[in-house]
Length: 213
Image 1: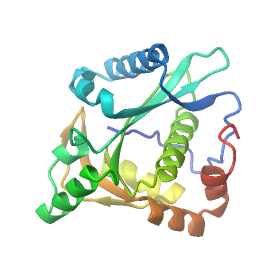
Image 2: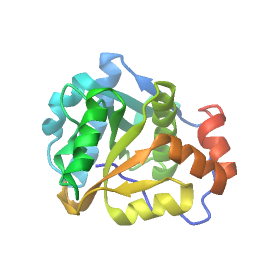
Image 3: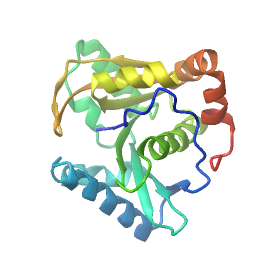
Image 4: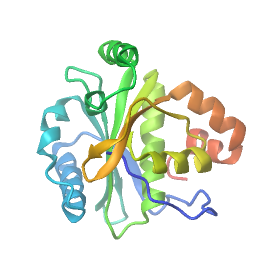
């Protein structure tokens, strides 16, 4: 379940210079990131992340690290195969929608923006948006067309209003890891155009500025 804190309406693009955000592949760093993820899950009584074990081979893991090189945030991207990503297991309004997305997953056009976990000592909104920014740039550099995401619809509305994301809910709400969530999709080219139009300053930070800015 991707999560985002409800930030102040006056939130501006806080500097990430105190932190670094990067794609991680070193097994020890990956282990540290996943340990943080489970710690956050335990603190929120979401249960074990063992259910995601099968996705690790097809995951791209992004970590946020403070100046002491401690992992303070993590998110992962689930590739579309060989296992169908978790959002495809949730119900959809139309079978045709699911079939299109399954084909995009199989052909490497669709992935899932998965778990976002932030240590309680870190500024949640700042770290989450920094992780999303790194993952977004990575996805667009690889010509990914669609992101799937599992999120509570009220949080989706926050992201749309404040940051220019363009979620489309594709199924009903169900109980998922402690919350009422639904499957959504993002067309990444549509996000780019919409964010650039309605939030040009934020777009510049999200898309163009260096990742340590």
